[in-house]
Image (cartoon, one colour):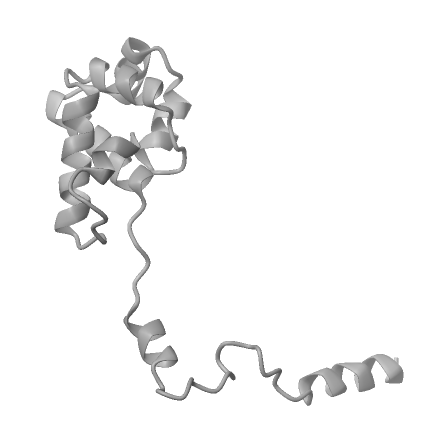
Length: 132
């Protein structure tokens, strides 16, 4: 038992490793830490898409199970898509969009506009539209 306690104490006293991000020295210009603090994680496409699906469904006053049945997917799958947990294929997006009375092009345009409005980096005019 004493050996285990000694090992535990030795681990607590270990010196910080140079490669650990919080211990690393900033580069010669000192910008590493500043950039890390300013950088926010980008919003994921699947999260924005899921929110858009949920908005369309709630505007129509439909239950998740009704929309899922019309789209030909399981309610569990649609729920995961709406929560941004699943990345649906373009075929699935089109099926769900159709069940919600919209089209794939309209929906991807809405999502792209929303992501651009929220400050997602731009890589060219319609790059997000082509991703779907």
